Image (cartoon, rainbow, N blue to C red; front, side):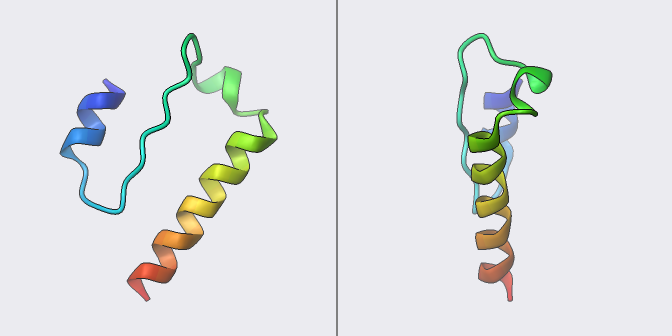
Amino acid sequence: MSEELHAAAHEPKRLILFPGGHHRSLQHDLEVQNLSLRFIADAARARA
């Protein structure tokens, strides 16, 4: 499903796949949280 959503999404977009991962396994991962925050901040700046 994630790959289908990524294919349908507009730029900017980024898909990072974590084998065996799911939403709950990654929500406490600080590195993943930082990647997400950086992506959102960059996307917001690009739209400004």
